[in-house]
Image (cartoon, rainbow, N blue to C red):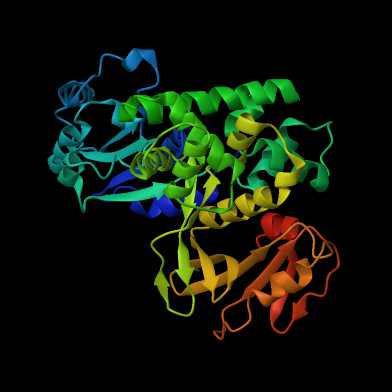
Length: 407
């Protein structure tokens, strides 16, 4: 396994600080391993194993911890009441514990504990009860492996296999970056079965069960529609109208609720549209991408005509892992694929398969016309050896962009 340094670097400054460290992200993205890597960091700093209290609600041995009272009783039983040492508490999938916030808030107030929690729902920190810890936590969102992480681990695991970058990129496009891929045989049928299992688990546990969805079949139809339209501008009304044309009645409001459930489970990523001239977010016509490309493969297999959407999905995922907020840009009648912002930094990105196809060259560069700020603007494609600078707009090969982290 590889160390997830980009996340550890963000978390380390908060170790031993009186704040709850909340780690969020899609189920199976590596949150448990990251918690273990934080434990390893503590041990390297001289913390004893007796000071570390770990609870993983996915393991049967912790099934008896049903609610906040059970949690508090268990944690308290592990602390030496005569000790003045700090105890480090790790609770994995904390949302599975009823009213967990009451216990975590109490432990924080007791000043004996440094607290780390993880959850697979975007809503577990925004519930009514979570107001108990409002202002007392810092959140770190974790993603599945980036391409560079994928390459590093693939080479570790396949020392005698094919490891050239073009091959690995084609594998990443297909299977995505769920860490569990590297614990099974690297065979297509096995990998797809694993990814389908991940998709079904997230769908059942984090969407259907958590939100008490009554019409699971309709939910799946909506998700498959969004998968078919990955990277396209979509509205709840569009989906509702399409389903009505298929003799299935559902209101736009219900469609929107189902989409939100999938967003909360990180099955989907939403990219809102931003009016570059008007400098405002637009209320409608968002784009939706997959939380990981392996989910798209689980649902639809690999469809060559979706390569452009897959490339956009990969670039979006990459910029999110680098800590950027990402929006779709509306530039009068044109569209900029991504506006990426982090603090005072801003980067514009256009993504396409090849600038040699049809009017792609004109379309991708013209998207920037009229944008008069001085922030970097890039066109990313799979081509090799293109002119790297045109009117201040830089071209870059997508694999170089992903692997070398030059931007």
